[in-house]
Length: 386
Image 1 (cartoon, rainbow, N blue to C red):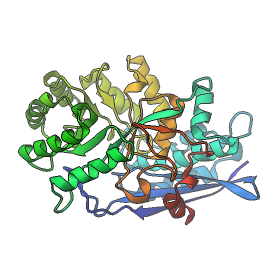
Image 2: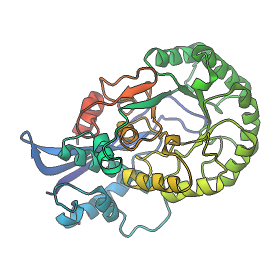
Image 3: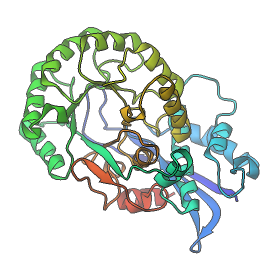
Image 4: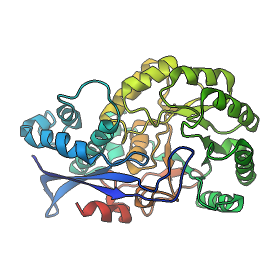
């Protein structure tokens, strides 16, 4: 059993949308295909991976460091102890050889894309959905077949007014989502309060609306906005300040009694541990959003979940960023709290399989082997080009 080739590339996910910090006019995603010599139905099995939205394709790191290390590795060094499958943990160690500690930026994104493709391949070799592979390994086969999802949208568009925002959110609610999220901080507080109130009018419950500042504010600004947001009783107040300002998060947590959410821009277990140690977050109400595709993959994510358990955090408080099929399988297989969804943005890289639709805010997991990328036709068409 061997890896025949690892193909990689970059795909545009250009959009006119913006949050409070970033516009997506030049955004790209990295894509990966790992071809094995395992033949099924007359064709070699291929594992597919990609980078999550919000970080650019890291093809240079994939090309210059990660792929050469994997392709030079002895065949047995990539296999499980019984030799019947690939071992993503061993592959992870090979990819990270000669890499210094720290520096968890684009490197973690590059590793995460290959890690996703490896897990997709591993599950296809077992002829099981990835969530079942994970449940068998880590939870005695117990699967959470229904996964909580929320619709992330509410970006700032050129010329987008309140009525356009309401039409967007109504579309999410009508399609089966119960909870929605919109951006804040890209307009004045007065303007964003009007946007919040317009959405709450549609949901009928402020607890069904989360807001996301994408790290836009200073600590003082975040506290000021938090005081204005607190009376609404929102689902959560997300990433109010720079994600690695742990002391700043602790200040905000002291002033804002409602749920906070952060973590999507932390890319390693040790960074998350520092957030838990020093960020003042509360395990009874706050949410952690680390994205496995951006943070060294599922291999590292299992270490993060173990660390969180040691610090008294339930994995139910974890709802990853990204809105991709990989995190959806992790939610079902490892029993974490749910998953983000992007039903209206990021083109082929947003949303799930073609036949997967939420009902009352939950998704019933499909049975396709691997991650199921083949069931998402527009994304599969892009990845097949590799």
